[in-house]
Length: 53
Picture: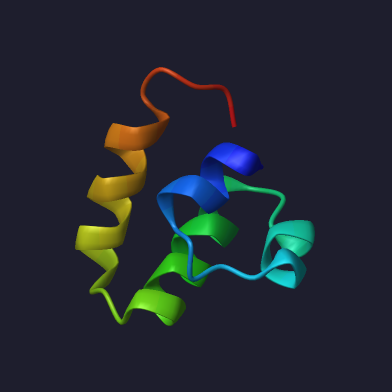
């Protein structure tokens, strides 16, 4: 989860503990950054393309 926090530093430790799926990460990034769903999905898909989540 350090990589997640390095990329999205507005996520709290509480957020990180609760996030278990990519869908939960997308929802939390949308919430914390005020991004539209499609933008959050694209950002996370690009980031996750070479990682296991």
